[in-house]
Image (cartoon, rainbow, N blue to C red):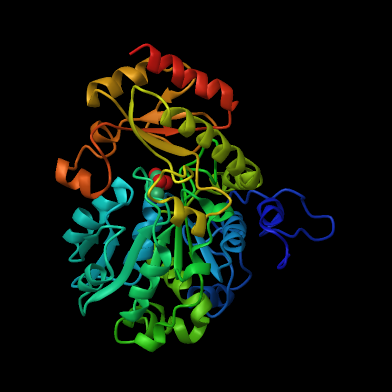
Length: 427
Ligand SMILES: *Cc1c(COP(=O)(O)O)cnc(C)c1O
Protein backbone atom coordinates (compact mmCIF):
# COMPACT_ATOMS: atom_id res chain seq x y z
CA UNK A 1 0.00 0.00 0.00
CA UNK A 2 3.00 2.32 0.18
CA UNK A 3 3.22 3.38 -3.44
CA UNK A 4 -0.47 3.78 -4.23
CA UNK A 5 -2.10 7.10 -5.06
CA UNK A 6 -4.01 9.22 -2.58
CA UNK A 7 -7.50 8.08 -3.65
CA UNK A 8 -6.55 4.47 -2.98
CA UNK A 9 -5.16 5.49 0.43
CA UNK A 10 -8.45 7.27 1.20
CA UNK A 11 -10.39 4.08 0.51
CA UNK A 12 -8.07 1.40 1.84
CA UNK A 13 -5.22 3.04 3.80
CA UNK A 14 -4.53 2.06 7.40
CA UNK A 15 -6.37 -1.25 7.42
CA UNK A 16 -5.33 -4.55 5.78
CA UNK A 17 -7.60 -7.34 7.00
CA UNK A 18 -6.13 -10.83 7.11
CA UNK A 19 -7.73 -14.02 5.85
CA UNK A 20 -11.35 -14.24 7.01
CA UNK A 21 -11.22 -10.94 8.91
CA UNK A 22 -13.89 -8.19 8.56
CA UNK A 23 -13.61 -6.14 5.37
CA UNK A 24 -14.80 -3.04 7.23
CA UNK A 25 -12.75 -1.52 10.08
CA UNK A 26 -13.98 -3.23 13.30
CA UNK A 27 -15.41 -0.99 16.02
CA UNK A 28 -13.61 -2.06 19.18
CA UNK A 29 -16.16 -0.68 21.62
CA UNK A 30 -14.20 -1.56 24.74
CA UNK A 31 -12.63 0.62 27.40
CA UNK A 32 -10.21 -2.08 28.46
CA UNK A 33 -8.23 -5.12 27.30
CA UNK A 34 -7.53 -8.45 29.04
CA UNK A 35 -4.10 -9.89 29.85
CA UNK A 36 -2.99 -13.25 31.26
CA UNK A 37 -0.37 -11.88 33.65
CA UNK A 38 0.24 -8.64 35.50
CA UNK A 39 3.79 -8.65 34.21
CA UNK A 40 2.61 -8.58 30.59
CA UNK A 41 0.45 -5.59 31.31
CA UNK A 42 3.24 -3.91 33.28
CA UNK A 43 5.41 -3.89 30.14
CA UNK A 44 2.69 -1.93 28.35
CA UNK A 45 2.53 0.60 31.17
CA UNK A 46 6.29 1.05 31.00
CA UNK A 47 6.11 1.54 27.20
CA UNK A 48 8.42 -1.46 26.82
CA UNK A 49 5.93 -3.18 24.55
CA UNK A 50 3.16 -1.77 22.41
CA UNK A 51 -0.39 -2.93 22.94
CA UNK A 52 -3.72 -1.80 24.29
CA UNK A 53 -4.74 -1.54 27.91
CA UNK A 54 -7.12 1.39 28.27
CA UNK A 55 -8.99 3.25 25.52
CA UNK A 56 -8.24 6.70 26.97
CA UNK A 57 -4.67 6.18 25.77
CA UNK A 58 -5.14 4.06 22.68
CA UNK A 59 -7.91 2.13 20.98
CA UNK A 60 -7.48 -0.15 17.94
CA UNK A 61 -10.28 1.49 15.92
CA UNK A 62 -8.88 4.98 16.51
CA UNK A 63 -5.36 3.79 15.70
CA UNK A 64 -6.48 2.22 12.42
CA UNK A 65 -8.08 5.49 11.31
CA UNK A 66 -5.05 7.49 12.53
CA UNK A 67 -2.87 5.20 10.38
CA UNK A 68 -4.96 6.12 7.32
CA UNK A 69 -4.60 9.86 7.99
CA UNK A 70 -0.86 9.27 8.58
CA UNK A 71 -0.62 7.62 5.14
CA UNK A 72 -2.60 10.45 3.50
CA UNK A 73 -0.19 13.07 4.88
CA UNK A 74 2.91 10.92 4.31
CA UNK A 75 3.87 10.96 7.99
CA UNK A 76 5.62 8.50 10.31
CA UNK A 77 3.11 8.47 13.20
CA UNK A 78 -0.32 9.88 13.97
CA UNK A 79 -2.99 10.02 16.63
CA UNK A 80 -6.66 10.95 16.78
CA UNK A 81 -8.03 13.38 19.35
CA UNK A 82 -11.58 14.19 20.42
CA UNK A 83 -11.59 17.51 18.53
CA UNK A 84 -9.52 19.72 16.28
CA UNK A 85 -8.95 22.05 19.22
CA UNK A 86 -7.44 19.28 21.32
CA UNK A 87 -5.22 18.34 18.35
CA UNK A 88 -3.89 21.90 18.12
CA UNK A 89 -3.49 22.18 21.88
CA UNK A 90 -1.65 18.86 22.13
CA UNK A 91 0.59 19.60 19.15
CA UNK A 92 1.72 22.84 20.82
CA UNK A 93 1.70 21.78 24.47
CA UNK A 94 3.69 18.64 23.66
CA UNK A 95 6.76 20.85 23.10
CA UNK A 96 6.12 24.03 25.07
CA UNK A 97 5.25 24.91 28.63
CA UNK A 98 5.42 27.74 31.14
CA UNK A 99 7.96 30.37 30.03
CA UNK A 100 7.96 29.28 26.38
CA UNK A 101 6.82 31.16 23.31
CA UNK A 102 4.97 30.48 20.06
CA UNK A 103 5.10 32.33 16.73
CA UNK A 104 1.75 32.01 14.93
CA UNK A 105 0.17 33.36 11.79
CA UNK A 106 -2.58 35.80 12.74
CA UNK A 107 -4.86 34.32 10.06
CA UNK A 108 -6.02 31.22 11.90
CA UNK A 109 -9.22 29.69 13.22
CA UNK A 110 -10.84 31.82 15.96
CA UNK A 111 -10.70 29.01 18.52
CA UNK A 112 -6.99 28.43 17.94
CA UNK A 113 -6.31 32.18 18.09
CA UNK A 114 -8.02 32.26 21.47
CA UNK A 115 -6.15 29.14 22.61
CA UNK A 116 -2.80 30.83 21.95
CA UNK A 117 -3.75 34.41 22.88
CA UNK A 118 -5.71 33.70 26.07
CA UNK A 119 -5.82 30.14 27.38
CA UNK A 120 -2.20 29.11 26.87
CA UNK A 121 -1.11 32.56 28.05
CA UNK A 122 -2.70 31.67 31.40
CA UNK A 123 -0.45 28.60 31.37
CA UNK A 124 2.61 30.82 30.92
CA UNK A 125 3.03 30.31 27.16
CA UNK A 126 3.15 33.55 25.20
CA UNK A 127 2.44 33.99 21.51
CA UNK A 128 3.49 36.53 18.89
CA UNK A 129 1.13 36.74 15.93
CA UNK A 130 2.49 37.69 12.52
CA UNK A 131 0.56 38.49 9.35
CA UNK A 132 0.60 35.55 6.90
CA UNK A 133 2.10 37.87 4.26
CA UNK A 134 4.66 39.49 6.61
CA UNK A 135 8.16 40.22 5.34
CA UNK A 136 11.09 37.95 6.14
CA UNK A 137 12.39 40.61 8.58
CA UNK A 138 9.04 40.82 10.41
CA UNK A 139 8.93 37.04 10.65
CA UNK A 140 12.50 36.76 11.98
CA UNK A 141 11.84 39.55 14.50
CA UNK A 142 8.98 37.55 16.06
CA UNK A 143 11.34 34.83 17.36
CA UNK A 144 12.78 34.79 20.88
CA UNK A 145 15.29 32.46 22.55
CA UNK A 146 12.35 30.69 24.24
CA UNK A 147 10.36 30.18 21.00
CA UNK A 148 9.47 26.49 20.60
CA UNK A 149 7.31 26.33 17.49
CA UNK A 150 5.75 28.16 14.55
CA UNK A 151 2.07 27.62 13.77
CA UNK A 152 -0.08 28.41 10.73
CA UNK A 153 -3.02 27.18 8.67
CA UNK A 154 -2.50 26.05 5.06
CA UNK A 155 -5.79 27.82 4.25
CA UNK A 156 -7.04 29.99 7.09
CA UNK A 157 -10.56 29.55 8.40
CA UNK A 158 -12.41 31.86 7.78
CA UNK A 159 -10.01 34.37 6.17
CA UNK A 160 -9.06 31.85 3.40
CA UNK A 161 -5.54 33.26 3.30
CA UNK A 162 -3.12 30.70 1.80
CA UNK A 163 0.04 30.37 3.87
CA UNK A 164 3.46 30.58 2.25
CA UNK A 165 4.43 27.28 3.88
CA UNK A 166 8.00 27.24 2.55
CA UNK A 167 8.72 30.71 3.92
CA UNK A 168 7.39 29.84 7.37
CA UNK A 169 9.19 26.47 7.38
CA UNK A 170 12.53 28.07 6.49
CA UNK A 171 12.15 30.68 9.24
CA UNK A 172 11.17 28.02 11.81
CA UNK A 173 14.13 25.81 10.89
CA UNK A 174 16.57 28.73 10.90
CA UNK A 175 15.54 29.25 14.54
CA UNK A 176 15.76 25.54 15.41
CA UNK A 177 12.03 24.92 15.88
CA UNK A 178 9.36 22.96 13.98
CA UNK A 179 6.54 24.30 11.81
CA UNK A 180 3.08 22.99 12.72
CA UNK A 181 0.45 23.34 9.99
CA UNK A 182 -3.29 22.99 10.53
CA UNK A 183 -4.24 21.42 7.18
CA UNK A 184 -7.99 21.17 7.85
CA UNK A 185 -9.30 23.17 4.89
CA UNK A 186 -7.42 21.80 1.86
CA UNK A 187 -7.01 18.31 3.41
CA UNK A 188 -4.12 16.09 2.26
CA UNK A 189 -6.05 15.49 -0.97
CA UNK A 190 -5.31 19.07 -2.06
CA UNK A 191 -2.24 20.07 -0.04
CA UNK A 192 0.73 18.20 1.38
CA UNK A 193 2.46 20.48 3.93
CA UNK A 194 5.28 17.96 4.61
CA UNK A 195 6.40 18.32 1.00
CA UNK A 196 7.01 22.03 1.64
CA UNK A 197 8.90 21.71 4.91
CA UNK A 198 6.19 21.50 7.59
CA UNK A 199 7.13 19.12 10.42
CA UNK A 200 3.80 18.38 12.09
CA UNK A 201 0.29 18.58 10.66
CA UNK A 202 -2.96 18.89 12.60
CA UNK A 203 -6.58 18.49 11.52
CA UNK A 204 -10.05 19.22 12.64
CA UNK A 205 -11.49 16.02 11.19
CA UNK A 206 -14.92 17.51 12.01
CA UNK A 207 -14.70 19.27 8.64
CA UNK A 208 -14.03 17.66 5.22
CA UNK A 209 -12.47 14.47 6.58
CA UNK A 210 -15.68 13.43 8.31
CA UNK A 211 -17.44 15.44 5.66
CA UNK A 212 -21.01 14.83 6.77
CA UNK A 213 -21.24 16.96 9.90
CA UNK A 214 -21.45 13.83 12.05
CA UNK A 215 -18.51 13.70 14.47
CA UNK A 216 -16.28 16.29 16.11
CA UNK A 217 -12.69 15.04 15.99
CA UNK A 218 -9.05 15.89 15.42
CA UNK A 219 -5.77 14.38 14.33
CA UNK A 220 -2.03 15.04 14.70
CA UNK A 221 0.51 13.68 12.20
CA UNK A 222 4.29 13.78 12.60
CA UNK A 223 6.54 13.86 9.52
CA UNK A 224 9.39 12.39 11.59
CA UNK A 225 11.70 14.89 9.89
CA UNK A 226 12.34 17.39 12.66
CA UNK A 227 15.54 16.50 14.54
CA UNK A 228 14.67 17.25 18.17
CA UNK A 229 18.07 15.97 19.30
CA UNK A 230 19.87 18.64 17.24
CA UNK A 231 18.16 21.22 19.50
CA UNK A 232 17.96 19.07 22.63
CA UNK A 233 18.22 22.04 24.98
CA UNK A 234 14.98 23.45 23.54
CA UNK A 235 13.05 20.17 23.76
CA UNK A 236 13.93 18.50 27.06
CA UNK A 237 10.57 16.72 27.15
CA UNK A 238 11.54 14.70 24.08
CA UNK A 239 15.29 14.44 24.65
CA UNK A 240 15.70 13.78 28.39
CA UNK A 241 14.26 11.00 30.60
CA UNK A 242 10.55 11.12 31.47
CA UNK A 243 10.38 10.25 35.17
CA UNK A 244 6.66 9.48 34.85
CA UNK A 245 7.66 6.56 32.58
CA UNK A 246 10.64 5.13 34.48
CA UNK A 247 13.10 7.35 32.73
CA UNK A 248 12.26 6.64 29.10
CA UNK A 249 13.77 9.17 26.68
CA UNK A 250 11.27 9.40 23.81
CA UNK A 251 13.75 10.25 21.03
CA UNK A 252 16.02 7.36 22.06
CA UNK A 253 13.35 4.71 22.48
CA UNK A 254 11.01 5.67 19.62
CA UNK A 255 13.30 7.50 17.19
CA UNK A 256 12.54 10.75 15.38
CA UNK A 257 9.62 9.07 13.62
CA UNK A 258 7.79 8.06 16.79
CA UNK A 259 8.92 10.31 19.66
CA UNK A 260 6.45 13.18 19.24
CA UNK A 261 3.27 11.11 18.92
CA UNK A 262 4.32 8.62 21.61
CA UNK A 263 4.94 11.45 24.08
CA UNK A 264 1.63 13.15 23.21
CA UNK A 265 -0.20 9.85 23.73
CA UNK A 266 1.67 8.66 26.81
CA UNK A 267 1.71 11.99 28.68
CA UNK A 268 -0.97 14.31 27.34
CA UNK A 269 -3.67 11.78 26.53
CA UNK A 270 -2.96 10.01 29.83
CA UNK A 271 -3.24 13.19 31.89
CA UNK A 272 -5.77 15.27 29.93
CA UNK A 273 -7.81 12.60 28.15
CA UNK A 274 -9.57 14.04 25.04
CA UNK A 275 -9.77 10.68 23.31
CA UNK A 276 -12.18 9.96 20.45
CA UNK A 277 -14.92 7.35 20.85
CA UNK A 278 -14.30 4.20 18.75
CA UNK A 279 -17.66 4.76 17.05
CA UNK A 280 -16.64 8.31 16.09
CA UNK A 281 -13.38 7.00 14.63
CA UNK A 282 -15.38 4.50 12.59
CA UNK A 283 -17.72 7.21 11.26
CA UNK A 284 -14.70 9.39 10.45
CA UNK A 285 -13.31 6.51 8.42
CA UNK A 286 -16.52 6.27 6.37
CA UNK A 287 -16.00 9.92 5.47
CA UNK A 288 -12.33 9.43 4.61
CA UNK A 289 -13.25 6.69 2.13
CA UNK A 290 -14.79 9.31 -0.20
CA UNK A 291 -12.61 12.34 0.70
CA UNK A 292 -10.82 12.45 -2.68
CA UNK A 293 -14.13 12.28 -4.58
CA UNK A 294 -15.85 14.87 -2.40
CA UNK A 295 -13.03 17.44 -2.36
CA UNK A 296 -13.18 17.71 -6.14
CA UNK A 297 -16.92 18.45 -6.03
CA UNK A 298 -16.62 20.91 -3.12
CA UNK A 299 -13.98 22.84 -5.10
CA UNK A 300 -16.03 22.85 -8.31
CA UNK A 301 -19.14 24.10 -6.51
CA UNK A 302 -17.15 26.79 -4.68
CA UNK A 303 -15.55 28.02 -7.89
CA UNK A 304 -18.94 28.23 -9.63
CA UNK A 305 -20.43 30.29 -6.78
CA UNK A 306 -17.29 32.45 -6.43
CA UNK A 307 -17.37 33.29 -10.14
CA UNK A 308 -21.06 34.19 -9.92
CA UNK A 309 -20.48 36.44 -6.89
CA UNK A 310 -17.52 38.13 -8.55
CA UNK A 311 -19.72 39.54 -11.30
CA UNK A 312 -22.64 40.61 -9.05
CA UNK A 313 -23.37 44.30 -8.43
CA UNK A 314 -24.62 43.78 -4.84
CA UNK A 315 -21.36 42.12 -3.85
CA UNK A 316 -18.58 44.33 -2.44
CA UNK A 317 -15.76 41.78 -2.71
CA UNK A 318 -15.12 38.03 -3.07
CA UNK A 319 -12.23 36.01 -1.66
CA UNK A 320 -11.61 32.52 -2.99
CA UNK A 321 -8.07 31.20 -3.60
CA UNK A 322 -9.27 29.48 -6.80
CA UNK A 323 -10.23 32.81 -8.44
CA UNK A 324 -7.53 34.29 -10.66
CA UNK A 325 -8.33 37.72 -9.19
CA UNK A 326 -7.51 36.50 -5.66
CA UNK A 327 -4.27 37.89 -4.16
CA UNK A 328 -3.48 34.34 -2.97
CA UNK A 329 -4.10 32.72 -6.37
CA UNK A 330 -0.38 32.21 -7.08
CA UNK A 331 0.22 30.67 -3.63
CA UNK A 332 -2.79 28.41 -4.09
CA UNK A 333 -1.53 27.30 -7.51
CA UNK A 334 1.80 26.40 -5.92
CA UNK A 335 0.64 24.66 -2.75
CA UNK A 336 -2.72 23.24 -3.87
CA UNK A 337 -2.83 23.03 -7.67
CA UNK A 338 -5.72 20.52 -7.70
CA UNK A 339 -8.01 22.91 -5.80
CA UNK A 340 -8.21 24.71 -2.47
CA UNK A 341 -11.42 24.09 -0.54
CA UNK A 342 -15.18 24.54 -0.76
CA UNK A 343 -15.35 27.72 1.29
CA UNK A 344 -15.81 31.16 -0.26
CA UNK A 345 -15.94 34.43 1.64
CA UNK A 346 -17.47 37.65 0.38
CA UNK A 347 -18.91 40.96 1.49
CA UNK A 348 -22.46 42.05 0.75
CA UNK A 349 -22.75 45.74 -0.10
CA UNK A 350 -24.42 47.40 2.90
CA UNK A 351 -22.23 45.73 5.53
CA UNK A 352 -23.40 43.88 8.64
CA UNK A 353 -27.17 44.42 8.15
CA UNK A 354 -27.21 43.46 4.49
CA UNK A 355 -25.16 40.34 5.29
CA UNK A 356 -27.76 39.29 7.87
CA UNK A 357 -30.67 39.87 5.48
CA UNK A 358 -28.94 37.97 2.68
CA UNK A 359 -28.41 34.94 4.90
CA UNK A 360 -32.05 34.87 6.02
CA UNK A 361 -33.24 34.80 2.39
CA UNK A 362 -31.25 31.69 1.50
CA UNK A 363 -33.34 28.53 1.01
CA UNK A 364 -30.87 25.71 0.33
CA UNK A 365 -27.85 27.15 2.14
CA UNK A 366 -28.46 27.09 5.91
CA UNK A 367 -27.12 29.34 8.70
CA UNK A 368 -24.73 27.23 10.82
CA UNK A 369 -21.50 27.64 12.71
CA UNK A 370 -20.15 24.65 10.85
CA UNK A 371 -18.28 24.53 7.54
CA UNK A 372 -17.01 21.91 5.19
CA UNK A 373 -19.62 19.22 5.06
CA UNK A 374 -22.00 17.78 2.47
CA UNK A 375 -24.74 20.37 3.10
CA UNK A 376 -24.09 23.98 2.11
CA UNK A 377 -24.11 26.50 4.93
CA UNK A 378 -23.19 30.09 5.75
CA UNK A 379 -22.04 32.18 8.69
CA UNK A 380 -21.29 35.78 9.66
CA UNK A 381 -18.08 35.36 11.75
CA UNK A 382 -17.97 38.91 13.21
CA UNK A 383 -21.16 38.28 15.19
CA UNK A 384 -20.60 34.57 15.93
CA UNK A 385 -17.30 32.60 15.88
CA UNK A 386 -15.07 35.69 16.13
CA UNK A 387 -17.26 37.82 18.40
CA UNK A 388 -14.58 37.83 21.14
CA UNK A 389 -12.31 39.87 18.84
CA UNK A 390 -12.36 43.64 18.53
CA UNK A 391 -12.21 45.31 15.09
CA UNK A 392 -8.39 45.57 15.10
CA UNK A 393 -8.03 41.88 15.96
CA UNK A 394 -10.61 40.98 13.30
CA UNK A 395 -8.60 43.01 10.81
CA UNK A 396 -5.38 41.19 11.77
CA UNK A 397 -7.12 37.83 11.39
CA UNK A 398 -8.32 38.87 7.94
CA UNK A 399 -12.00 38.87 8.93
CA UNK A 400 -13.89 41.93 7.67
CA UNK A 401 -17.01 42.94 9.64
CA UNK A 402 -19.15 42.36 6.52
CA UNK A 403 -17.57 38.96 5.72
CA UNK A 404 -20.04 36.17 4.95
CA UNK A 405 -18.48 32.72 4.90
CA UNK A 406 -20.19 30.37 2.47
CA UNK A 407 -19.37 26.68 2.70
CA UNK A 408 -20.39 25.01 -0.51
CA UNK A 409 -21.49 21.41 -0.03
CA UNK A 410 -22.09 18.60 -2.48
CA UNK A 411 -25.46 19.76 -3.92
CA UNK A 412 -25.73 20.62 -7.62
CA UNK A 413 -23.72 23.73 -8.42
CA UNK A 414 -26.56 25.26 -10.47
CA UNK A 415 -28.94 25.04 -7.50
CA UNK A 416 -26.38 26.68 -5.20
CA UNK A 417 -25.78 29.53 -7.64
CA UNK A 418 -29.56 29.96 -8.05
CA UNK A 419 -30.04 30.10 -4.27
CA UNK A 420 -27.37 32.78 -3.87
CA UNK A 421 -28.86 34.69 -6.84
CA UNK A 422 -32.41 34.75 -5.41
CA UNK A 423 -31.17 35.80 -1.95
CA UNK A 424 -29.15 38.66 -3.42
CA UNK A 425 -32.13 39.68 -5.56
CA UNK A 426 -34.33 39.81 -2.44
CA UNK A 427 -32.18 42.36 -0.56
C1 LIG B 1 -12.89 23.85 13.09
C2 LIG B 1 -11.44 24.10 13.08
C3 LIG B 1 -10.66 23.84 14.21
C4 LIG B 1 -11.27 23.34 15.50
O1 LIG B 1 -11.71 22.04 15.33
P1 LIG B 1 -12.89 21.36 16.20
O2 LIG B 1 -12.95 20.00 15.61
O3 LIG B 1 -14.12 22.19 16.00
O4 LIG B 1 -12.44 21.36 17.61
C5 LIG B 1 -9.31 24.05 14.14
N1 LIG B 1 -8.73 24.51 13.00
C6 LIG B 1 -9.45 24.78 11.89
C7 LIG B 1 -8.78 25.28 10.67
C8 LIG B 1 -10.83 24.58 11.89
O5 LIG B 1 -11.54 24.85 10.79
